[in-house]
Amino acid sequence: MARRPGTGMRWLLFGVSGRLSRRVYAWSLLFWIAVLAIPVSAVVRAVPDSSEMTMAGFAIIFSFVPAAWSIAVMSIKRLHDAGLPGILVGVLVVPAASFFMLLIIMLWPSAKGPNRHGPGPNQPGY
Image 1 (spheres, helix red, strand yellow):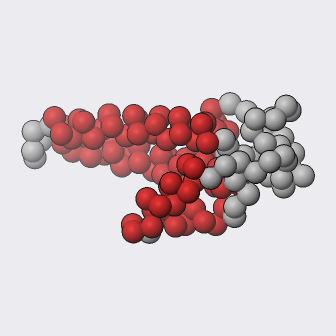
Image 2: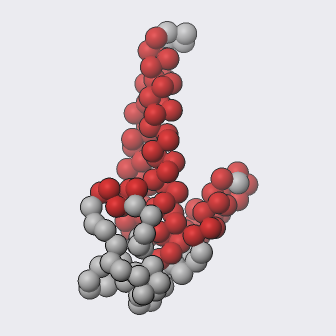
């Protein structure tokens, strides 16, 4: 059995070890959607070929990189919680299959009891 995962936002958004429940995973995805909506809305409001458009483009790039990493590691933790191999996260980059993989990650129930990735998220000692 693995040791207890870290706690806090840094572990939640960027840590690779441990397990993640469906509810926490869904709220974390909503967080990243809200963060990414800010520079996207700036692009929509900007005048074409302006410095505002350029700055908003850079903001999208600089916010997308940590968001992509965070979503990948959160998905791995969610797959570990469901008792599935983390390598399945690679399916999220396949356009035709990513929607179905996201549904599997969101709807697959947690494995009962502790597994090699740690105790269950809803168990005492988590």
